[in-house]
Amino acid sequence: MRKSLLPAVFATAALGVFVVAQPRGSDAHGAPADAAPAAGLRIGAVCSSDIAYATDVSCGLGDFGDVRFRCPEGTSATPCLRTRTVTLENTGRTPLRLVTISGSAPGERHEAVSGLVRPGARTALAPGAGDTYLYDIVLRFDSGPAEARVVALS
Image: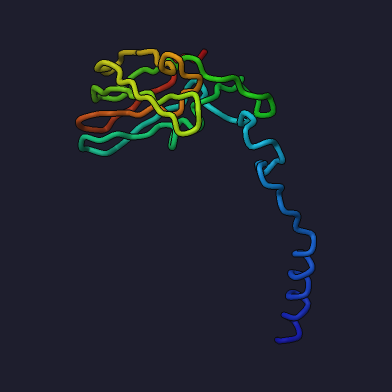
């Protein structure tokens, strides 16, 4: 039994010689770290929560992905454009408020809270005045479940 394990150990060790580390400041594909992602916010994306009590749910960290960029339909190689506006529809049964978090520089964050968005209603969100990036969209509700769907992007 020991003899049969020995070639596997040598083969595994030999594979380690060919591992190439990514240069610092790049992603797994070698693109610069500050380049637009290959995937971002898309029409039809849904952010939801099954939590039954009042809370905030980040859509950018979960269901929507990187809300800074909107990507052309059906392509992943094309650079994505910066998000200017997002129109969301409340597709859940719970009235909610949508919080936009935006800024222009690292660490700079501004919040804007929408009015109450009733089930079936739509609202357009954009970065705050003077901000260049939309960093996150947050669902804020008193009781769940809550759900919002992206219906338009520009």
